Length: 272
Image (tube, rainbow, N blue to C red):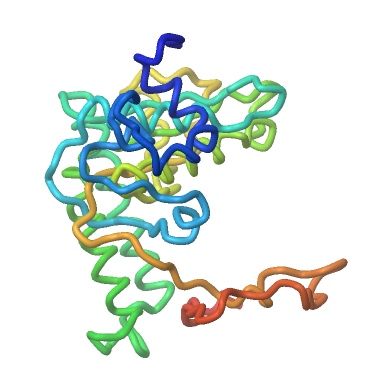
């Protein structure tokens, strides 16, 4: 890591240490905007703002992700905490080339099959799903676009883990903070993405195609690209439904929400 001020990562590791300089002359820092690894024209995003406005992005432009931006995302992902600081995860990045194209084709076919099953099982075409302007119908159209154009996704990352003991994923579940760091870094750089587990149906084929060792688990698939839409405030269920105090289903009166928080509708009912 650079120690003479010429390396981007030196500053990327300690943004809050120099945030107080944001209003001062930043011309001596690479990039000149206080967070030197941001592309030109991208405004800095505060940590809490990023956490509360990082949407699941499933529609991507055709733009390629430049090497420098992709390296920054992966660097942020590799800074995630892991048990005993072992970093047992690995990121297999699929961009261009015949192997990447073949892997994306496997994933795309799997995603289309699984989405068609989910669409039917969860009733996306029934009830309010029949109303073209309903949130349910809009979500279905977004998913249609995502799976139908998956092979065109600019970057697909297979987040892998080699469990420290045995084959139990929970031994190495530290892979998921790395995935979240990857998505938050994408948000900060003006990109977006979504995490999915639908690679499972073609897990064996992916292992064979990409020469992934048998003792390595593909823990998640993350699609990345420049959003067709934009990030913004997300809607979730009320905090009182999700946070308990002292025991299951026990109210947490201190768990309040910012004024004006808007909520999502109910998800499809669980099958009985």
